[in-house]
Length: 441
Image (cartoon, rainbow, N blue to C red; front, side, top):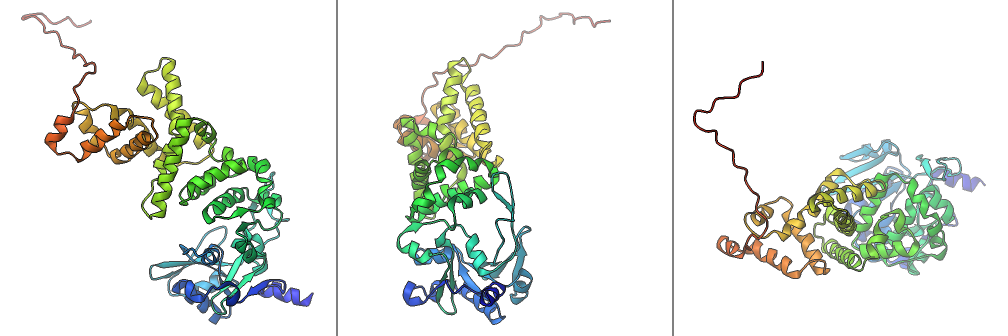
């Protein structure tokens, strides 16, 4: 009892925790960034405990180079900041410290802990507020999956494992900490995050972790749209978007994330189009080339826009008006679930609205389209449509050649204008000496 109390007060790992030496896991302090190692050393010299934690440890053990290194410590933010020359306390609900060392920013968080039974929750069991400081054991218990609850001590090169994460990594298994149903009710986004991590890391969802997801998928509707959008962006820009969406469908989560995805993928042309868009995005992400979220969302929703536009045209609407109304309809439906920003929806609209204009290859219209600010993005969208068989490959080839041609070649490439010409209204001339109409009294 006394030992347990002391460990709780000082944030020490429990006797049941596995403290694996370097020989057991092969991870050395040299694998961490110099900044992370220095932050841990500085905190230890000041009398605190400090560990590299979470995704960085998990990735290193899987042979993946982490994008950043997070530190967990028993020091409070006001105790951390004075230890470093360049450090900022950030956050309102839960304060963190960003330590700036050269080009690197190391995020340092105090161990978090709270009794989830007494934490503030909504009617569905989702935890609303439980941001308090705690012990290392509580901090580990709060984390979502066992592979994310690993603590690496650069000083001793030991990995502290409180929930069997090392064994799960060896088995290539992703397992939630605690009772899956309870943890999903506390935070439904954990279901989405589990799918993303499993697809990204090539792990298999533990049967008990996977089983409740389909029945609990409606809980996603309780998640704030802005947070859901952030998680969706992480999923789509993970470099494994194709695998993630397949996994979403397998576990029954897709309806709570992209409600129109089923409709799109049920169409042979739509499925091929979306598959190609995701594959291209994954290639760009893995090659560390820039990716536009607006382009990706435009691709995911294009065939729904196209179907709605055709339905409106069949009811007698003119093509341009039908496309405009279809864009409004689809975006209104989607933005009710995902808080897609206006900046992104504006770009998506431009990409969609420019597609019919690619058919116009005569007169000055082709030149005006070429000079449009979003031309390159819209052309890439056209190329995607051609690759999926939605439009003729000749159309995409013409525009590809037109972009690279010189002025004389471009002029020769223009097609004859066969469309109806607008008739200019001629003003009737008054006969000479005609009197002006008398003004009204």
